[in-house]
Image (cartoon, rainbow over all chains, first blue to last red):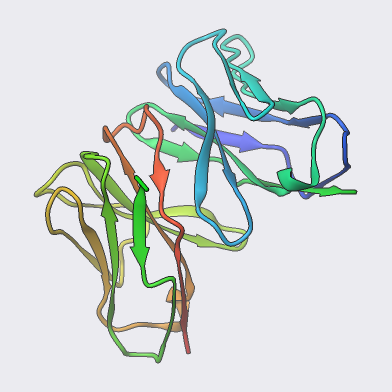
Length: 109
Length: 114
């Protein structure tokens, strides 16, 4: 069946460091891909999405490119801030939504 | 503000008590969902409603019931709470069942069963 795999966390970075959170997926069709962010004590928020191969989703300095050939949708940000500390979930949507397990990010000053 | 509203935000129940978690969305979305989030278990789908008048079981429906009261409201009921139902519950909505436009989540209900 369809699935989403994310890199294990927690990830700890210094402020202004480069961020990559890996996400790979398995799907029988051609899904839409998403990144959601969950700040402490809050619900998940849609961060960015891509609907077809080679699409790049971007928001708040975060980017991810839909790579069909490697079945990946890695999240990147060039310079993280303390306020980016949160849990990040990769997800796919085809006939239903599948969430990855989440990756916790802590950014220290 | 447009979005998904959940009530209550916090609740403590004794084993065997019942309660209903409320969820309402004002985005005219067709589909609504209830998830629970537990440490190390990720998000697990309890029930969903593809459209007004329909509901279906998700991965972990045992011990829960739902009602899609109208297009806006989707409630989750615990008939006889158990400690294993201690969790954070999230309601979400989407224009389509497939979720290909993305979900909008509520801020959650933190439930403790003692």
